[in-house]
Every structure is written in structure tokens, then in C-alpha cells.
Image 1 (cartoon, one colour):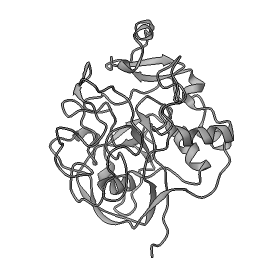
Image 2 (cartoon, helix red, strand yellow):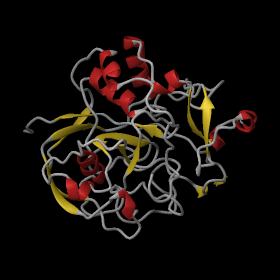
Image 3 (cartoon, rainbow, N blue to C red):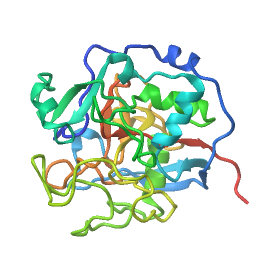
Image 4 (spheres, rainbow, N blue to C red):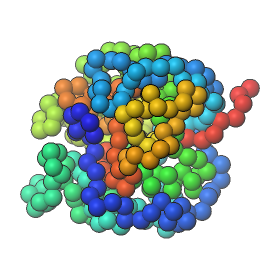
Length: 316
């Protein structure tokens, strides 16, 4: 990440499997299910907000035209991803690699002290052996009481494989931002410009990264927590970062088309949107609707998930 990098570290050593191998591992299911039909149209994308990170390429703000499209009201859950795995036998990249990144306060103290692999410049992340979507905090953890939480520890390739199986795809950055804005033009958040003392989203509470507020623990919440935005999307700010189809470029707003933009030129990193439960206004405020994140497409972490999209149809 550019700027302050609390977000998601990158896996070292490159992908363990190729995108082609991932595509061949799955069989397409039926058409997209549970997707909101949005009309598209023109909107102002990006931001020149002084609170943004210029190196992330959040601006300049510009007018973009979108065709009709569909997008899920919520991120893909553990239950939904489990159906995919049981049907196809799919193995995620974190499972193949044998580890994934977990925020240190999510890891039991005994395991925390035993782990020596810490990403450079990101001491609050641990490369935890056996951490994966089924064991989000590593050995001994489980998701039995979190089936309605967003699936995490999924790479871009994993997310894309799920979408192909479910008959959908990942949203483009432009589609994601249009939907996340909830019909509010030029606002910082899905609900407006101000961040209340009790935020209507799952972001860091307390002092980042060592002092969570009393009664709050860093981690995910159910995907339909908090009120939806004006277009019906839940958790468009915080909870988990959500993969997008685009390659990431800080020149996105200068280098992509004004109609249905897509950064298709390979850059080595894929875009993510929405921020996560680790974002905080004092350090990394990337839970704003125009904020951008990125990571290598084989990387995964305990705050990385995704939301499915689909092609639109004319609305009545």
C-alpha cells in the first residue's frame, strides 16, 4: 500500500498456482443469485479530499458513465464459500501456501510469541501457519459460529474462482464505488460526510494498533450488520476489504475510460475497496468510498474478502 499501510501485507514468493489452474478447477453453477440490479448512469467518481492518500490515486474526481449492472447486497459469507468448496473441492491459495496473514491481536498469546515471521514495516501482522478461510486465526480456530460473517483469507484468484462458479464476477472499481455511494453524490461515506462517535460500520474502535476500546475486539461482524446504504448495500465501509476486477494503478483516474472504466493493463497488484475493521481515522482512513487499496492477487489476510457482481439487464 502507499501512504500509511495498516491494510494487508503481500505474500512473498508469488502465486502458488496460476489463474488458469484456478479457472479449470471449478464448474460454473447457475446465474447470479441475490444481486441488486442497479441502473448505472453518470456519477462523480474519485475524490480530491484532503484526507485522502494522493499516492493511492483517489483522484482527480471525474464524471464516469456506467452501464446497468448487478452487485450483491453483502460480501460472500463463510456459508456461501463453504458450499462452493464442498461442491468443487476447491483449495484456496492460503491453504496451498500453508499460512496467511492475521492481525496480531486476533492470535492467541502463546501462538503469537512463537511466530517469527513478521512483514517488514507491519509489525501488527503475523504470517500464521495453517491460517485459512476455515481457520481464520490459525490452529484451533474455526468458523462454526461465524457462518454469516464474510469469508476471509481469500486471494483475488480465490474470489474470482468463486464468482465464476456462482455465475457472477468481481465488480469493477467504478461499479463498486457507484454502489457504495448509495446514491449520495460527493460524500465521504455511504451515509454522508460525518463519522459519528459511534460509527455505523465495523472499523477500529480505540487507539490503533495496540489499544482496542473496551468491549470491542478486532475482527469481522456478520455481513448484514448495520443499516444498508441508499442502494441496499451492507458494510460498504469497513468489515473487510473487497477485491475488485481491476489491476491497481495510481493513475487510474487519468488512464482509464470515462465510460465503464476498467484498469486492464497488468501492474502486479489488484484493487480492493472498502477498508476493514483495522481502519481508523488516526492512521488509515481508507473506509471512505473513494479510497483505494491493493495487493498482489495471490495474497490473503484476516481482513480480506469480496462481494460478487454480475452483468446488468434493462430495468423495467
